[in-house]
Each structure stands twice: as C-alpha cells, then as structure tokens.
Length: 291
Image (tube, rainbow, N blue to C red; front, top):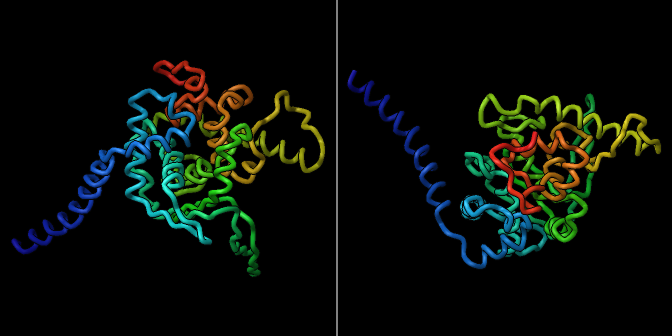
C-alpha cells in the first residue's frame, strides 16, 4: 500500500512540477524589461501603442518580453532576422492578447520569416486523386505549428495602413482561433457569458462578404447592399479567414470598420478588450465597449 501511494505521489509530482515551472517561467520572463531600443522599435511599429493607457503599455511590453524570449525566429531564403523584425512581429502578436489572461501562444515555438512573398507547395485531395501545386504566399499559420511571414509584405502593410492589411495580425488571429482546437472563426472566450452574439453577427457579416465576392466575380452590384463592405474578399473563403481579415481591419483601419461594420466592430471590441477608434481619437472608452 505504501509503495502504491508513493507511486501515485510521484506521478502527481511528475505532472505538477513541469506545469508550475512553465507558469513560473512565463511570469519571470514577463518581468524582464525591454531595452530602450526595443521600446522605441515597439513604438515605431505599432501606431496604437502611444494611445494605450500606461497600464496597457506595460502589459504589452511584458507580453512582448515573454514572446521574444520564448519563441524562436528563423530567417528563410537568406534573411537575417534583425531586432526590428523580431520586435515588430512580437508587438503585433501580443497586441491581440491585451486585457485577457493568456499563455502567449503556448502551441507556437517557431516563427519563420521570409524576405518577401514566398512560394509554398500545397497538396490537395479530391476523392482518390491527390495533386500538388505551388502558390505565392505572404504568410500562413500551421495548426499547432509555426507561423510563417513575409517581412517585405509586413513592411508594406506597416507603411500603407490605409489599405487595412497586416499579415502578422492576420496569421496570429489564426493562432488565437486554434486555441479551442478548431479553425472555425470563433476564438476561445474567457467565460461562457461572452460571445453570445458572436455567431449571429459573424455569420451575417460573412454572408455579406460572400455576396461582395460573388458580385465582384460576376461584375454586378449586390442589390441588397445599402453600404459597402470594406473587408478584403479573401475573408469570404471561410469563417476562419473571415475572422483573420476582420482582425486586420479592426486594428489597422478601425474608424472605417466602425462606420461600415458597427456590429462587427462592437464584437471585436468586446473580444479584444480595446476600442482602437476611440484610442486613436484620444477618447478612451468607459467601462463598457461599444456593442
């Protein structure tokens, strides 16, 4: 009996010690301050940073510190990964985590960075036929695997925010989406009371974007659209891609999203615990985010 209890105790310790060590390590790394240069690089990369309250700036810095120490950055096709690249990618990734308890993308270990748009091999299976083709990509997120980004495309996104695109925000939105085990456009909410209108709003807006895509492909104008959608039609491919595209637009062109997609904007405000439109205008929201 004593031996049996000892085995049970040992098994519990084997399970608990790594768990508590990982938790301690995350908090320890979050407390490591960014250097002055890293802080300036973060400010330069994220226009929204200066608008955040001091407490959220500190929270963002802490998550960035953890990300930089916890994730491996690998340059591809001869790219040398520099500190501006690392801080920019980490800043966008951690912007999505503000205001929520998180383990900083626990299933992500490696970020692959290409100098520019790259070519990836894609395998498709239709029935009993398997085919392979190559496609040019700006980025991709592998389920429980690495994030791949084109630094050249991310730089273009940062220099031209009016286009409403940011490949880093897009791919890390996919990483959030996978945390519940599915790529379905519904991320993991903090508690059961959140996201009660998510499916209805997202479904309605997804169908709206699909109508926009159909109209563009046919050359027609949707007769039931009173206001245009500003979302990239790439989001019409699937609910997962819609969530990633909506996340880009929310952070990069929030005023336009709030104007043309007010309900969608409200859902993303509630999920991301931020109101970028009000912050950029110098009017932080009150206790409640717009719905």
